[in-house]
Length: 106
Image (tube, rainbow, N blue to C red; front, side):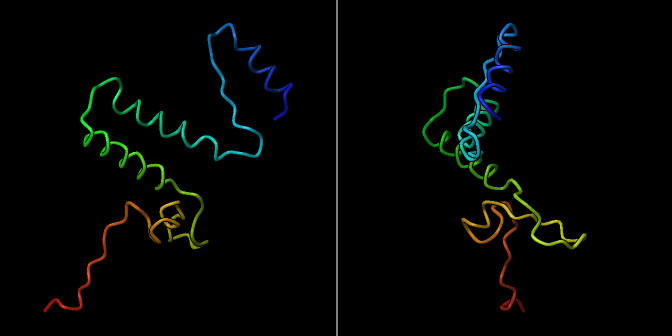
């Protein structure tokens, strides 16, 4: 989008008391902190928390954001797994069920 489009959007909605915050062009990664803040505010509101409770909330928000699908891993119609930021962090999805080593099971 260009500056004239941004100005037109702001001018046409200013009477509705809408505040717009635009990412810089070609920089969609700038919206990550907005996504995290909105998840936190929707979850906790204005409640006071202990340090450990807040750390738990932040960890859950981090897991949600890093589990969002980026694209399918394969073109196979029966493979529903998607590539997520968690794949780059841990090598597997963050919300995956742990695989147990069953070689020692009798």
